[in-house]
Length: 154
Image 1 (cartoon, rainbow, N blue to C red):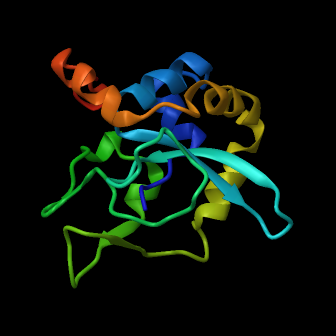
Image 2 (cartoon, rainbow, N blue to C red; image 1 turned 90 degrees about the vertical axis):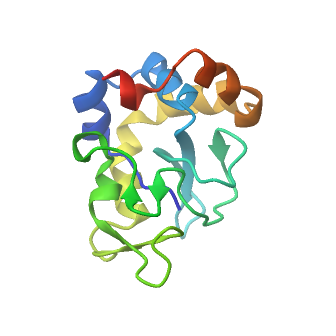
């Protein structure tokens, strides 16, 4: 599954957390809105790196798949642009190009990242409303042709 961003990651890279920032991040093709459902069926939205099998910008299915940033040699993002979730995982030793293992799941599982995003639910819910029907394959070619990649711009 794609690695999670913390609010601090977003603020460090973009200066704030706002709907325009969420829109910019999603339009890179590398980021999506994910949903964590707790034991009481409460949903909390958060930002994470998209997976190769995610065709929509909002993931409500909770299906694990390979991260779009993972290559045969590791993460494609430079260390200072990686989300915090990418800094606590190691590539799967049996198949380094496919998946990663969280080195500290008891401390930094998806539930921990979801907790950090609770103060920003209004902004992320606006993103959910805006991008609930956004299909990456219909937009990525345009973004690539225009050289749009936040990770290369900054």
